[in-house]
Amino acid sequence: MALTVGFDLDMTLLDTRPGIKATYDVLSAETGTFIDSELAVSRLGPPLVQEIGNWFPPERVAAAADRYRELYVEYAVPGSALLPGAREAVEAIRARGGRVLVITGKYERNARLHLDHEALGVDVLVGDLWAETKGDALREHGAHVYVGDHLGDIVGARAAGAVAVGVATGPYSAAELTAAGADVVLADLTEFPAWLAGYAA
Image 1 (cartoon, rainbow, N blue to C red):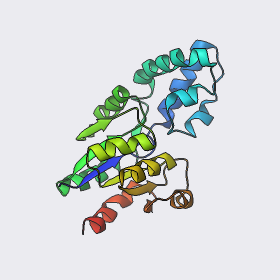
Image 2 (cartoon, helix red, strand yellow):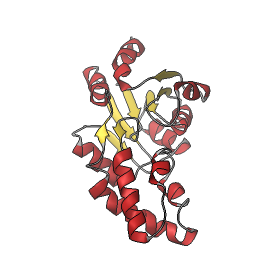
Image 3 (cartoon, rainbow, N blue to C red):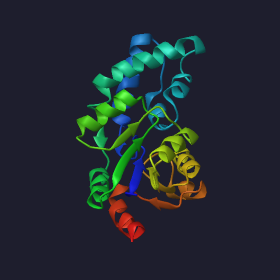
Image 4 (cartoon, one colour):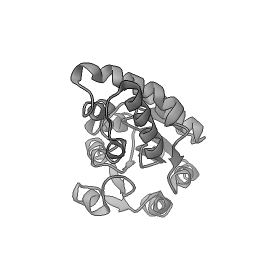
């Protein structure tokens, strides 16, 4: 079986914070609802409706989330950028004949727009999954490794029996990722090709 590596998207492959902050700011202005966008982007990872629920009453969450996803296309996709080492990490897997997955909690259509915008080709994209449910997709697609910045990504990797690789580019430190059960922790994806060479050997 070909080497198969999964990645989270936000703060693993992409720095989406500037674009997401801009999206929340527009949503706040449109709806007249206060949203602390700096706080919101400091805790990316869990499902969107969870964050929206911090600012809107329950009966308005679904509509606010739908509008956020619409605004996202204009503000967040062009306002995000690949994190250091992201393209090289994907290329390192390709160089070994491997497959690349992106398993993310993000709305799948918008995740696809990100990948297309950055011309980052992957074999499989699955959106709208979080923590243990990421494990379902990782198992389905035979992932050997899952790379992410969030404690929920470690949960997903563990649920799939995959090697959990943490990257300290999101809200958690290397020590926190290690304490949560990551098998290996990298400062960022610039360290991934060297780690992959040792893993593949």
